Length: 113
Image 1: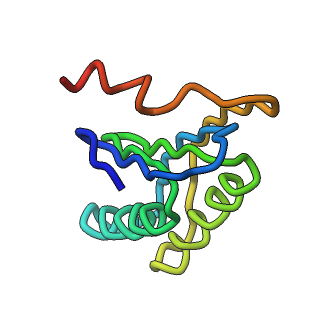
Image 2 (image 1 turned 90 degrees about the horizontal axis):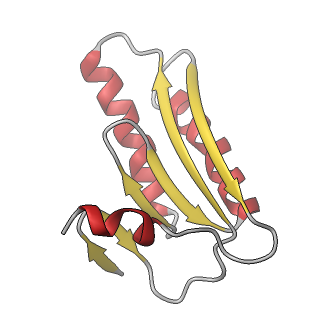
């Protein structure tokens, strides 16, 4: 694992044919609860072993398309399990079946030097 500024790059990954940006918005009782639930979702994303970038409004993740769709689904479940009654998410998906998508590294490193 390599830390590059604000995101993590994992060595030895397979082809990354997709990237996802997800913003999870739990229906929480207060701001403290909202932050706790979002932190649990981010902890789940960190535990997937995928390359990710946590931003102020969303988290970007890159990897294989099917795996990312599973992560998106699980983010909803994690938020519900963490105690919110409902959850809304905004999801952006880039998918390139033949080849690799532009990486987080290429997109943001130049802006954090």
